[in-house]
Length: 411
Ligand SMILES: [Zn+2]
Image (cartoon, rainbow, N blue to C red; front, side, top):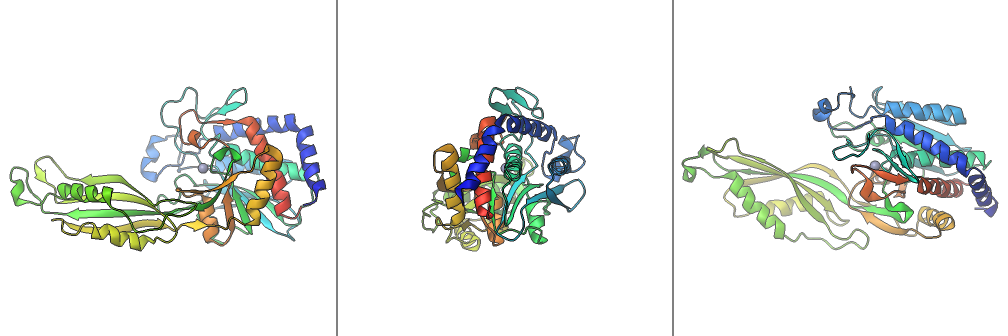
């Protein structure tokens, strides 16, 4: 990248800092006022202000207005009207395409808030509301990066795209997705690489690998009997208890991964029994496993099944859902350029790391689009009461992203 481009971006940023700050706060306060709570359909009745889960079109409409006002080209896509997505573009489309997808839905507020979760509370440099860190703040900062590049008069040979997408927090929860997976399945993401602004990490981390996520259902079948004559039945809850004790000490077969570390196992749900006076004939547990490269969902399923050998209930183990792991090379240009821009603005190079959770980067990498996670905000603030973020850190992120995006797209 020629240093002239970098200088122009930084000069624009410095001389417009106050205006950018006001614009960020204004955008974010409009964003958080949209109650785009995304929950599974069965819980929708707890949120009387929603007709459809998420209703992210409230947000995509705001972003569309902003795009019109700022003179950006954009496209909108929606599987259903209330759950819209929007992608903004800037560039001549003759060079590399960079995709920066933020999400417009949020998790429910939950309990313990000191102020209205859907009204931006400003306390010096700190803002609080549901979504300020995950992911409405980072989305607003990404939009500012687009504006900085354009208004600094940078010519982009490729395409710098910022997207506001629905349905990240309860992705495909009812068996159908309205955001990233919908776009990918329909060939609507046209990019060579992506930066996902949604991992927290205060710009000190770059997510280059993510574990696979597999949910298993383990079912124990015994024999039902009257509760007064337990000897006539086979208690499936007791069988499951023995199974889970074995699971706690079982060592799965895998090799520790240099970035992702170890495979993890969590027993997240257990269901069984009908009444105290019935010997339960069935019991089921749902197990969430995070697999490292080298492990397969089927391999771990067979291990889970073998664990039941010799127990007096019958056991089955079924894969309920699965997403494979991914990793990208530490030597990727994308990582180098984002790290350089961060060092330039923040004075510190981010560290590469892996995640046990899944972000948009997983789906993008699986679709052949090299993607990293790189974001601002404190990961511990996400999904919590009194979710918070720093205004100045958002502005820094916009500055870093503007420099990195310009270089990545041939600015
Ligand atoms: Zn998020």
